[in-house]
Length: 445
Image 1 (cartoon, rainbow, N blue to C red):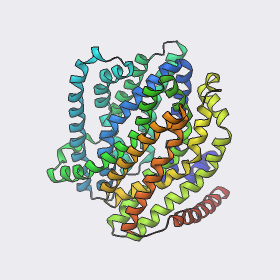
Image 2 (cartoon, rainbow, N blue to C red):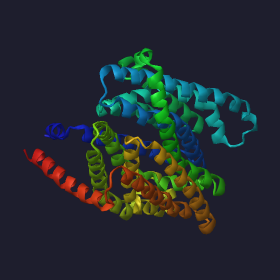
Image 3 (cartoon, rainbow, N blue to C red):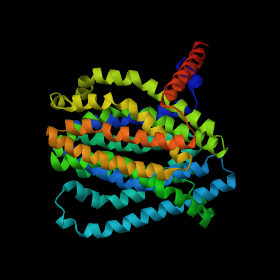
Image 4 (cartoon, rainbow, N blue to C red):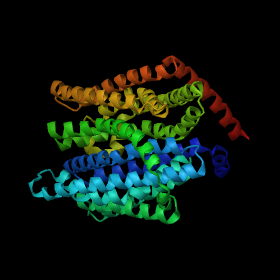
């Protein structure tokens, strides 16, 4: 019965959503274990270390992910090989350059007092290199809309990491250094797997061409700024809280926003399935279809997220106790979660407006927009802490850059093809009704 139901529901949207759901559950499990195995201060240092690591990794992923999918989706087989080989060249060059830049930083380790920064400088280079093949494999399978393979790549990496964390928890050996070993182990095994099974397509390196490298590079130089700036929102908050309020406050803030995964799961899932569809419509010269597809995805996700946001606000205290344990029950974590969930319904507009700007070859607007949003975020968060003296100020300030981003993106998209924001929700509601009827009929058969 269950297998028959899954077979009926099996499509790219379901696979992408299920994949992100599974990964979020694994990530939540890992967080639950770490929050109980480490002290509040140690958790804060781990969050700081991981935030900086993922921020630097964003330089590579931001440069290549969107550009690769845009030029790969719907291309001929020879063109695909050219794009893969050229992307491998750029990805390898970025990795080597950042590793070389890490060398002089390593020499200054004796003068670095922050233990999280010490861990980052020590381990960034090898982790960055180890994750290159699995990163490029993820780009390939996402562009081919093989979300079952994408799930396997992510599951292997996260699963190995969690396996080692569980062992550390049971053997009372959990510390920052051992967590790094576990993280590296997951990256190495996953990359070797993607190379051996052929998903990374490293053999296509020989098909790289100078014109294609330039084409991907020219697009990527804007998309990397957009992605890097977007990720700087979270990282800048991490730094501001860490240096203004301390690692313990950072641990509480991170716990409070952890259940934002409820929002990120469908956003990542539908962005992964929607981008190839948007790109195909744009490459066909159909402006109306581009905007219609964007409205469909944005409105549908907003409607789907509404009950999840309401439920999260109501059950915030229960969620915080389950994830963080009793020592966080009387902290600000639950209210931080409520604040984030209150304006989370704006996220689909921001995410899909930005994604569509990239697809219609307007990454420059996205880049400028993100810079404005970043300045607004840093300013608002800093003022928020100065005014409230707590992490509440950062949470409340989070709505400022989102509203600014939506306004700028809306202006940019209206230059391409005019539409009204309200139409997004109308289209989404109609799409929700259609899908609900289709799946109900499938389940009833």
